[in-house]
Amino acid sequence: MKVLLIEDDAHLGEALKRYLEREGFSCTWIEDDREVLLILNSEAFDIVILDLILKFEAGEKILEKIKKKYDLPVIVLTAKGEIEDKEVCFKLGADDYITKPFNPRELVLRIRSVCKRYYGKEIVTVGDVEIDLEKKTVKKNGVAVDLTNKDWQLLELLVRNRGKVVSTDKILSYVWPYSETDENSVRAYIKRLRSALGSDLIKNLKGRGYMFLE
Image 1 (spheres, rainbow, N blue to C red):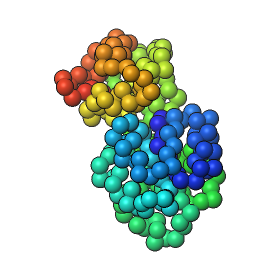
Image 2: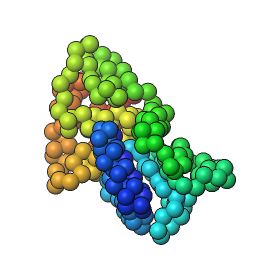
Image 3: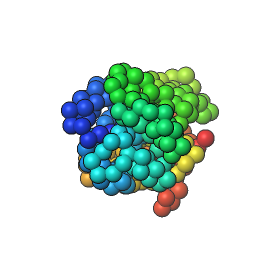
Image 4: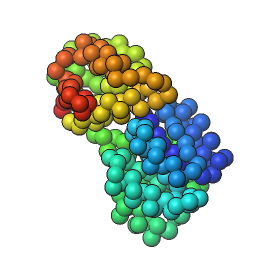
């Protein structure tokens, strides 16, 4: 699961990034809130963790922009603890609200809970294929399917967005964020998944991307 952390406190941001990565998340941390929309346009994420007190723009404004433009859950993580602050954020679409100081373990629990609500159940069954998003396992006809890490990342992205078209650019930024991999690799991995799970589960929408069928 890919997390975008927006936090201008360098000490907290670095510590949270390390903690989340130890818990199995992929975490991108940015201090400069002017980069938020730029990075969301260029990379794919599963969830955003957003501080409200930032250097250049109010977190509430950033929350509003994210919710208007992107289909992403957002957890607010802030020192602002008044009920009025929470009311504003929830009206803008915040999916959860945590006040500082906090236990990082609670943040992990909230991330998993929010994503479960946002993306649906953790075990997805389509025909004879069972995909457990929490345990990261796949079975076909009750037999475990052996997938590489990249296979799984691609499958997870498609399954969490099942019924929606996922563009090739989004797949590349999610599965291969730091390489020059092109759409030929995406096609090759899609072919591998179809071979392992069944050709009818993943639909190719020419010029648009791929869709995992519900």
